[in-house]
Image (cartoon, rainbow, N blue to C red; front, side):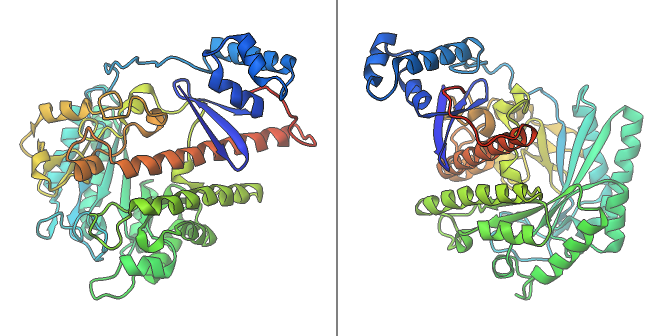
Length: 466
């Protein structure tokens, strides 16, 4: 399986099953469409008058050699088998420290942080039970991950501190290591809290949508005032306090800012170097919900963003955009490529009362209640269902060129829009494919730039070589 695409005048070919990327010339580009389907003499005849027979033969030899090496037309490493999907252990929890929030974000999938219920904070006893549950379900895995989430988790900072301390002690006792992450709107992120997060080396995801007018339109305070100025001041102070490391800015774009590239550039212009701006997930009737007719503009925005970030790199400044971070050499292990985030099996969310759900976006959907950490109840049948939701069981995924990078997309989005975790959301698929093309192009240009820096030359020579 090959995926061919053109980007900024470059002809790029992805060998799907090996993950190898090739930058090709016009002749090789055309030959790949007929290779293996027509005899050599027929191919030479077809291209006669446009290419020299010797050039055609040379290019065909190169294609055959790459095929023998497993870098072109490589076979599916799983051949449709799903025995590698999932490991049967839980490695990550999302702890909902607060079903309450000090903002009233219009697009909040959690209903202003309450997830369909009342304001609620997680008691420390529930948090400890969650960490005990994670240890018990983690098998032989040493490295475990916990994300403090909400609502706004800093509304429950005292419990957060106690859980970090408990997790460190528990890890030492059980031979495990916890990596903690906090997702916050930053309004409560003062010097005391920043000092604690820095001392404990806690990764932080900071919510900021981009330009002031974009952010304030969707992320107002309870009284209706904008939150941009306070959030930005707190975020800048915090990022400076840890020398710009171990954080990223996480924004959301909606139909109100389809020109979201401007928001990424705005954040980069403020000095931030680790940025993610995500498409909103919202009901179709919402006025800010994305629509299919928006896709051409969104595709163009991703393409423009790839070019702008390359210019940053060429100017000596590395700005990292989450969706363009792609490893073309090693990448995730095969089980990770089959099932992605592992929601519902390896990754679970814990509500303030201890209820377990497949991930933070499923919290409150009673159909997907998996148990409770305080009583040890856990629905292994539902976990097995999610473990089976991978690229060889999801509708259309096995034949998709993006499958080993996309891993079947978001279970929660699939269920929300199509009523099944086995049927991916079509618009999400299209956006993911475009982002992947941009990411591949970005990485390829970065590699070429590094090679040219090591071996300066007047220009890349024309060649039939891959």
